[in-house]
Amino acid sequence: MAYYVVVDLEMCKVPKYNKPGYGHNHEIIQIGAALMDDKLDIIDKYSTFVKPDYGVLDDFISKLTGIKPEDLKDAPMVAEAVEDFLGWLPDGEVTAISWSFADRNQFHHELTSKGIEISDRFNHILENWVDCQPQFSEKMNMKKRYSLEEALVAADICTDGHAHNGMVDAYNTALLYAKMQREEKLVLNKYYKTAHEDSEPEHLSFSFGDLLDKLT
Image (cartoon, rainbow, N blue to C red; front, side):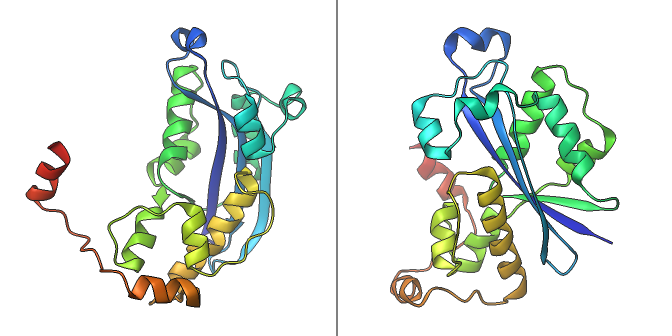
């Protein structure tokens, strides 16, 4: 049986004085996920906090995510958290999905920079990761990259829980992904649909001229 797991990471910033020992700007503090079966029905949810080695949970990130210092105090380090996440996944083929490739890249950069060995299964998941953000733009016939929040409103998906919580965002992204796969023409929120129909569609193809425009 094939499965799909939608992943959302929450991260904190790494201060300049810690970057020489790490080399990246962010560090994982939460792994959230929603598991779907081959019919794209959500069958399970997952969440774990992660204790950072180099990053600092500042007030901005704490207010944004709802994550508090006490949540991270006794949380597992990233190697243990990833192992627990992999243990939660069912046997069989699992395709990972996220809103942009940022989370996949964070996993790769953080584990590599910390010298943590990536298992064959997790490496397979990383290599076959799906970014569903451009799929939504294609459904909308627009070049722009939508934020998850805007896409959920446009697709008329009622959300619950704290936005920017890893498990909540993963769950909502799973609902959106399933809707995109099931509807050949995406059914939009009626108010958003009216505004969208009044806008000019954007061609999804890119030309050499587009590249030059970005360079000038």
